[in-house]
Image (tube, rainbow over all chains, first blue to last red; front, side, top):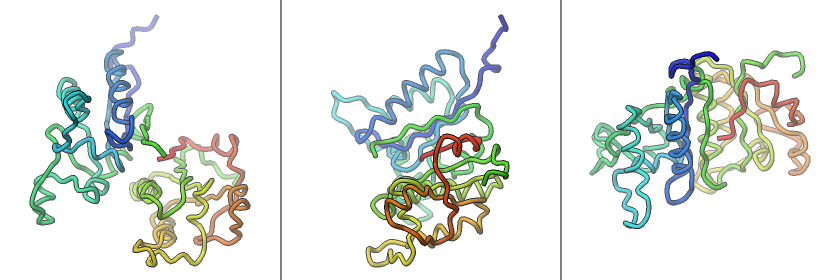
Length: 141
Length: 120
């Protein structure tokens, strides 16, 4: 039996394109990510694209008897030192901005939740090349 | 088609029609950035997605950019090939495309030629 240490396990990247509270995508991706980490796999990138960027809004305020998906992802990310990356083009057109972009476009507020970062599709391109598997979580068609 | 090696190429599939939502545009953006980073990438239009290829679209009439114009940039950016599923083309009665697309039969043999197939 070969000894498979963590670094020998194939790395995964996750792409979330469905929004929370509209689709199951962020929830399925969360469970999948948790299962990967529990079994010692490496998670190279969590990339929010298209409607998936809504997960990173600091203003998401679900009712108290529903799951706080933004908060859950923040906790998971903090515990495992993963920083989910939000696609900048998808984010800006949907009104999701960090402080820098809010200043650049002279908008009255920024709303990117702590623990998420904004970057370009180049992150995804790199993940496709680096990760053994890239798994997509889509919203409803 | 048959004689070119595409085992290193990523295929991005667009199967929803243009203008109704932004999924297709954002799928195209993925293809363009792959190409911008010099990664081999191709596009396939299938199902209702073949409507992207219709000639003489006038997106301005519904306050949108005409998608065939965005698509026209794909080759310039280095997207190697644009494929269209011939069954879907026949179903929608499309016999001319803009930009030019290579008609193929989108079956398992076709998909197996690519490194990875992504349907954003």
